[in-house]
Image 1 (cartoon, rainbow, N blue to C red):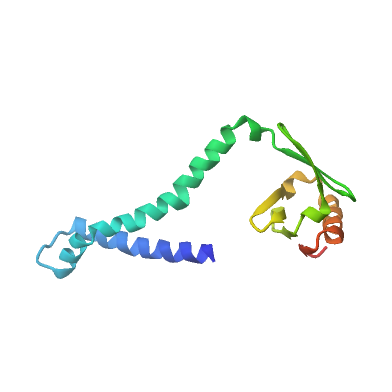
Image 2: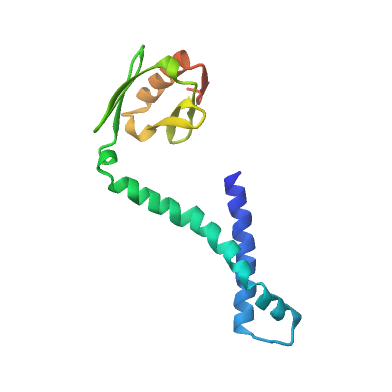
Length: 152
């Protein structure tokens, strides 16, 4: 859904930018469309602000996160029949399977949700091979009530 919105936004932005560039390159004050472009200059902010929110702010947040010493070392997950043991540079936690509401698998990651908007993220690139991914899927299917996982 977000991708479709961004495509529509990009097309509208491209058309508007083209009209502004054409009006700037070929000024003709006697034409109605030129007057319309001059009057719509405040609408430029309608296109600039979403660009800031979609691209610039996430980059700034990511930069802040990567410079934080707590997150540089990542996390280590250990899966067992009783739950998940999570260890970071500043904390250790033993999370029982009953704490997870659902698990969702994407092309690149597993998301273990402990609440509707809180998830532990496990990138697949952190697993050694496809056998580890298959074993993890089986463990997740057996222990998490809602498991939206790929077929083996």
